[in-house]
Amino acid sequence: MPPLEHFLLVAAAIFSIGLYGALSRKNIITVFMSVELMFNAVNLTAIAFAKFLVPVWSNRFLFGPELSESVRAAGDIALSGQVLAIFIIAVAAAEIALGLAIVIAIYRNRETIDITDVALMKK
Amino acid sequence: MSVLTVAFWVLAVWGIASALMVVHTKDIFRAALFLVSTFIAVAGFFVILGAEFLAVVQVLVYAGGISVLIIFAVMFTREVAQGNQPNRYYGIGLLLGAALFLVLAFTVVSTNWFPEFHNTEEADAIARGAFSDSSGGLGALLREKFILPFELTAILLLAVLVGAVALVKER
Image (cartoon, rainbow over all chains, first blue to last red; front, top):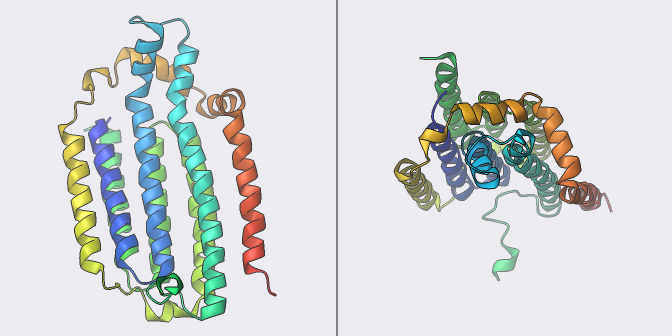
């Protein structure tokens, strides 16, 4: 099993690539794709923490030093990282659906999806 | 080297390379396909980390649903012919991305993550209790402890559905 740091470094790399893409591209669809990359990196981090850190910590601090009989409760807490990832996925899906609807609306009204051209609020 | 380590490095190279291709490919349609490739690599990481249900959800929702939405948006907009051009903040974006990665990497490397707690018998016992039926455990957890966020997510998705239809409706 690779150590926790390796997973975190891969997630950091994907997140940074997403930030770079979101800041440096003209096309709004590429910006959306970069934001999705960042969501994925966050999910990867949450699940890596849930796998490596949460089980023993929750067991130690909630139930004492020895392995308690309520492994089920500790396991519940160990799974909460995955629950967080599920909610992130749901919110990301909502965000991309609404965002692309806005893209289509902008394109229909202004015939462009270049974010440097869509600057109505600048004036 | 164990099988998991080999799988990790294959997935790491695959995921980071396709993430870079998402940003750097000229053709936006191909960038969307590389995005699908990144999603599948991340799903592979989920399998390594013992989150099989989330891996399946990742493939269904991201590689299936979100990528189809993005590809539809690519095809609805004519500007795709101009390709994936950088804007004038290209240098700043590159600099910020690199700086963020350096800061995160430094933090990850210099923090004590208590490696003596990882993959111990205690962790294995808890993981067996929790992950022997990871999907069932998740379902019970969502129903018992996270029922309010779960229902709120349902309302959010309904609102998004209505909002998206209202936004793109022909007048």
